[in-house]
Structure formats: structure tokens, C-alpha cells
Amino acid sequence: MATPRQFRILMKTLDGAVARALLKAVREKKVVIKDVIEHIDDEQWIAEAISLSEADITGATEEVRDALKKAGKLAGKINMADPEVLSWLAAESSALVTAISEGQREAIREVIAAGNAIGQSPRQTALTIVGRVNKAGVREGGIVGLNGPQGRAVANAIYALRSGDPSQMREYLKYTRRDKRFDGIVKAAMKAKKPVAQKDLHKIISRYQARLLKTRADTIARTETLKAVNAGHQQAAQQAVERGDLGSKGTVYKEWIAAHDRRTRDDHRRMDRQRVLLNEPFISPDGDRMMYPGDTSLGADPGATINCRCGMSTVTVYDDQ
Image 1 (cartoon, one colour):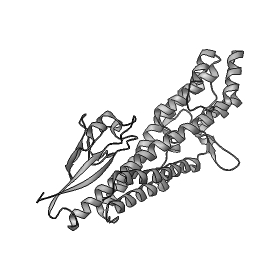
Image 2: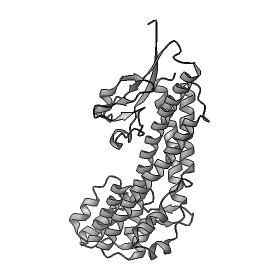
Image 3: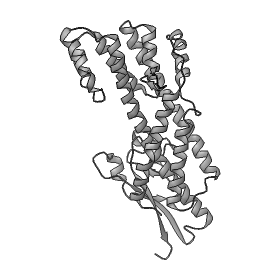
């Protein structure tokens, strides 16, 4: 069986591929801007028009499948045609689409409200939502793929920059993911006590949105890769037991391996080396139940899984020990 270090190395090589696939799906999403303008007061319509489907994120789900396969092979032999494996992949694909879509609805609501508050035209609000497609055919800006809090951050940035209030614009300059190359424009507007010009606002907000999207894609990629890597380990071990390759003369356990650094959750640090039977869940101090780090199938709170970097290992205790 693979060591925790091997799994962490594997994760680092895989999550970048998932993030790139997600960003590609967003850039290639086809949205007709005039239709969005016509339906600018219809949240439901816009949400359906810009939402990513399972077909859109096929590239990302294929990378997750690859992570599961590679992790399973690292842990032993894994049959990717096994019904449980196929069921897991189908469920994860559906859950990922649902999570992205639900987050986007809140983001749309925030951006529309901000546009209305500052008297922004339907066209400008629509462009904030879907972004622009440049001469190279690449989408720039937009909230496709962002979640609710990120949509709120975009809305707050728009409101601050168009307010003409230096104190509000100063708040924008605290945003860590802003593009600092545009700070001079913002400072000049602050000095003049005037709103940032609309043409400059688009450039500033588009770059801010792009950076938020990269952050969102990286977060999803780390979370989904971690889940796939540990699920692959779990599936490989279960299949080995069923084949009689593991545990025929002993009992198979699994151990939680915490990532020991400042970013590790206190609960996960306390779970380090927790040992349970292979087919039983790990239980966190808060009561979250997970078959493996990153697992959400038993209702674990997102706060226990998002950006988790823990791993697991299997241990066989033989009857004569």
C-alpha cells in the first residue's frame, strides 16, 4: 500500500489538471449577451442560461476519474469498471454541478442588486454577469463558476468603485485578489472624489473576477482531487479484500493521516492516526462521519472537507499478532 507521502505527491500532480479543466469549461461556456440583457430581471432564467452542465465539465470529471484510477493503482489493483466505482464517479459529477449552480444563483442575485443600487444599465450588469469574449475567443470576467460570497465581493467592489466615496473606494484597495496595476486609476478617482469611469470599471472588475475564478477553481480542484485520491485508496482496499488479497488471515483497518502544518484543521489534527475498520467511517470530534478524508456521502459538513489535505492508509492486523 502507498505511503501518505506518495498520496500527497500524487495530489499535487493532479489537482492542477482539474483546475485547468474547470477554467476551460468557464471560458468556453456559450452565452448570448443580448438574451441576458432581455432577461436581466429574471434571476431564474439567467441562472439556467449560464449554469455549467455535466457536459460542460466533462474535462474536469475525467481528471477526477483519472485521480481515482491512479490513486487506486498506487494502493494496489483497482477495477475501474466496478459498479461501486462507476456509481461514485456519477454521484461526484452530479454533486459538483449542483454545488457550482447553487453558488452561482446567489452570486447572480448579489450582482443584479449591486447594479440596481448604482443605476447601472442592463447591458453593464449583464456584462458583469457573463463577461466579454475577446478577439481570441476567450471569456474575460463574468461570474460563471463563482460562488455566493465571491459574487458578493464583486458586487461590493462595483458599488465601492462607482460610489465616488473615497472611504468606500479605499475598502476596495484592501481586497487581496484585486489587480494592483489598476490601483492608480482608483486612487485618482478617490482624489477627485468621483466614481471610477465605466470603461475603467469593466477592466478592473474583469481582472478581479478572473482572479476570484482562479481561486474558486483551485479550491474545487484541491477538494475534488483529495476526495478522489482517498476514494481510490478506499475502493482499491475494498476490492482487494473481496478478492482475498487482503485480510484473509487478519483484519483490515484504515488510519487517518493528518497534514501537520498551520493550515490543518484542529479536528483533523486530533483525528491523526485514528484507526477504524475498513468499512466503517472515521468520526471527527464534531461528529462528522467520513469514509475517507474529503468524503461527503455521510453528510459531513463542507467545513470538514473543503481544502482538506489529509490522507489515509490501510493497515492489516494479522490474527497471530
